Amino acid sequence: METVFVDNPTSMDARKRKPKPTPYTPSEETNFDTEFSLPHMPMHLHLDRDSKNTENNLNEKTQNYSVGLQGDKANIAVLFFLYVLQGIPLGLGSSIPMILQNHGISYKQQALFSFVHWPFSVKLLWAPVVDSLYSSKFGRRKSWLVPTQYIIGVFMLFLSFYVMSLLGDESQNIQPNVFILTTVFFMLNFLAATQDIALDGWALTMLSRRNVGHASTCNSVGQTTGYFLSNVVFLALESSDFCNKYLRTEPRPNGLLTLSGFLYFWGVVFLVTTTIIMLFKKESATEHLKDSDYGLVGTYQMLYRILCLPSVRAFVIILLTCKIGFSATDAVTGLKLIEAGVHKEHLALMAIPMVPLQVLLPLTISRYTVGPRPLDVFLKAFPFRLLFGVIFAILVWWTHIVKQSDGSFPLYYYVVILIGYGLHQVSLYSIFVAVMAFHARVSDPAIGGTYMTLLNTVTNLGGNWPATLALWFVDPLTRKSCLGGLYNGMSCGTKALSEICVSSNGECTITIDGYYIETVICVTLGFLWLLWGKHRVQHLQTLPESAWKCE
Image (cartoon, rainbow, N blue to C red; front, top):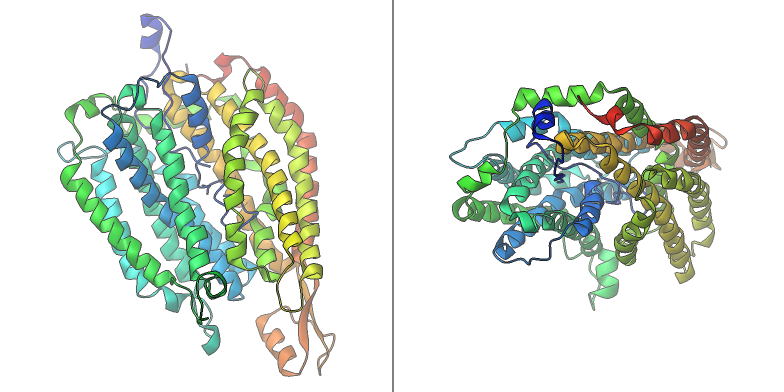
């Protein structure tokens, strides 16, 4: 999704000593698993919006693209719509956990499902294959994009006939099949990540040089639009409560949409769009000439050379560990709000007023991340983001108190949540923009695309693995007891014991919530990490450019 174009000012002899720029420039994640896609609204920040989008937009401001869009308007429209399609599986993958939470699944099962977001964080493993193996006759990018989108379309059509049974049926006491759901949505996101690799590469050659900066705009706006349609809009129209309250005069038991119908519709759209692209959108010979083929083995060798740099190894350790302190807050808070009675569609709709803030924050923060020490902003924002873990835990506790007898919440409750979430975004984006600015500063221009992709992929992976563990450990840390009935005081931590408690006229209630324990542990680990990592982060900013280059 991002390619870095850097003019190398070195002499011709110096150029000969450096490796050729790699054509492999696939998307460098956030996210959208991911840090801003909000899969567990409103706190779990996973935008598989890709982490590169902000950096691209910042780069776009520094370059001159004022010539206009002549000759590229149709190409921009094509790119935008293809990125919209890319956002559909991402949004669906973030909607399912909220639906499953209403079906009463465990947090271990939520942890299992969280693996569906991993393909966008590890696609670096197969991105060189997508970039290097292709049919020049059919088209370098179309060789992967067309079959991948056809498979996604067929996959959605097939899944539409079975997905409702996989979600279970509470009326018949049929539990969701989380393992199968995880498998199929993991495959769907794997295909979307592969499409993303091909599309990012094509975006850089489809547009003319003067307009190539608009590729990041198509990516950011298009992917966000697709995510919005399949997350916020879908969850609202799927909810019978929302539809009955705002869209109907007579209440009905179901929403205007079902997951099955939504999948079927977009499956057809994928097939039709891909057919049009295959028949009418050509890759010209001049587009191929814009890429210099690094080769499959060469790209993997270059990744290895980058990882052998001591500075990169130290930075990778920082990227893989710095988000441990945020994991409970980001991964669990939204689900805890749903468990407390907040409707999932209301949480999804809370993303709407955040959009202007998410657009303005990176532009504002970028003023303070220019220069040789962008990570100073990271270090200043870090403790504030950790403190939001405590604040959100208090808000979850407060949710149970302000919940009204009819299950609704007063207006001021949502106002407080929005304010808290908005302030949280300031600290989150400060860290995000600072890290992206540092990536751009240290990446070797001779291999900029591969370098940036590696760093951004590691950044996303550093957010995914703690989130999965945070979801996994909520249940083991939680204690439940039976209140009343024949088995009063008995532990009812398992489903079987809970059923025994309820059958004896008791109530299985949470006495110790693992979420609060996790929050304390994670925030504590976060401050300990800050003590350990502060000087290391500052030291990395003092290293010369030669420490980051593959000679």
